Image (cartoon, rainbow, N blue to C red; front, side, top):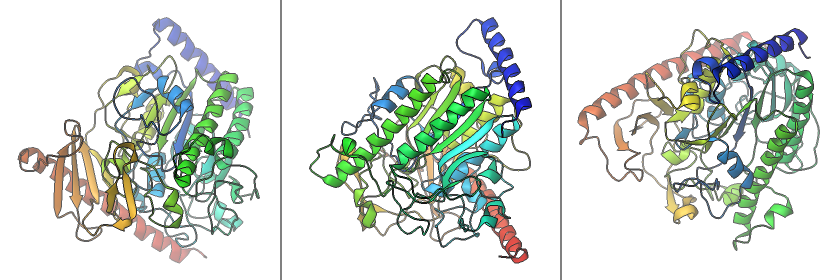
Length: 521
C-alpha cells in the first residue's frame, strides 16, 4: 500500500535537495550534502559471475576484458559508472554473501557459513529477524521497497503459510521488502525443489507467500519484466524506492534463448551455453536500464552492480559441467578465500553525482548498508557490530576509505582443486580435488592480504600467508618473514576478529536452539 504522507515528505526532501544542488553550482556533491538529495536505489546482484566473466571494454588494464564473452549492456553501464576493481563479496558462497550484503555484517555472525540447503536445513540456519537489513533502513527513511529474484536466506517450509510470518523473521517481508516475487533458493521446475532451472520456473512466490505457479520464459527475463512493471508504478507515485534484484543467473543450471546461444561457436556446446547465459542476463539488464531511461528515473537513481561470489567450479558435479566461468586474472573461485573466490565485478552509477572512472580502493558489499545509512541520513543499526563502513565520500569525491579494522572473511568449508587452462580460459577443474589446506580466514588491510589455514573447523588458524596483492598480484612473494612486524600486527587483528565473530556465532546458534525448544514446530 502506498503511504501518501511518506511520498509527500519525499517530494519535499527532493525539492530541498535540488535547491541545494543548484546553489552548490557543481555537478559533484560533497558527501556532506549528498544525504540531502536522496536518490532511488537499485542493487543488482548476479549469481556466481566471476571477475573475468565480463567484457566492460575498459580503456586501461587487463581486468574485465574477456574477449570470449559479449556483455555490451554492462559495458555501456561500466562506461557510465565508477568501476570498482577491488570490490569484494562478503563470502565465497551464496547464502552467507547475501546475508552480509543486506546487513553489513560478516555472515558468520549470523551462523550462516555455507549455502542454505533447500530441504535439509529447515529452521536451523537463517537470517534472524532481529537483524536490520538495507530494506528496513530505507523503509524507515520512507522508501518503497521491493525484491525480485532469489532470496536464499532460510531453509523453512515455504509451503506452510505460517512460515511466512513465523518466529524466524527470515522472510523478505519480515526483513523490510514490501513487494516483489522471490524464489526460496535458485528457481526450480516445481515447488518440490528437486531440480533448479532458469527456464520455465515453477516455484516463485509473492512476498506475501502466495505461490505464483509455473511461469513461461527465462528467469532473467521474468525477473526483469516483473521489476520494470513495479518501477512503472513507482514513477506514478513519485515515491522514492529501493529495488533489490538478486538474479539467479549465471548459477547452474544455465539456460538461454537460442538467439544468445547462436552467437557463440567455441566448439564446446556447454561453453557456448554458459557464455550465452551471461549474454542473456546482460540483455535483460539492458532492458532494465532502458526502462529507467524511458521512465525518467535514471538521473535520480543510485545503481549498484555486483556478484555474490566468484565463479562456480567446472565439473564439480553433473550440473557444473556447464560452469565455464573464470576469475582471471585473479586466482581462485567459488568456495575459496583466494582473490578469485571473493573479488567480483563492481559498478556504481549515479549520473551527475558519482563521476565515471576506475577505483582501486578495497571495498566490500558489507559497506553498502553503512553507505546508504549515510546517504539518507539514517542512523546505523544499534546494538550490533557492523563490519562495513560508509564509502560515500569515496564514491562522490574519491576520498580515501577509512577503516578501523581490516576487511574480514571467514569460510569454514574451503576446497582445493587443480587449475587448468591459461588466460580467460583458466579455471578450476572440480573433478580433480586436491588434498591440501585451503584458507578458512582472510583479512585485507591496504595492499596486503593475510590468510589463515586451520587444522580443524571453527578453530584458530595454525598457519598464515601474507601477500602484497597490489604490487604482487600473482602472489609470487610470501612476506611473513620479510615484513615480520606487519605480519605480527595483521595476524593479531585476524585473531581478534576471529574470536569476536565466533563468539557471536555461538551466541546466535545457542539462541536459535533455545527458541526452537519453545516454539511449536
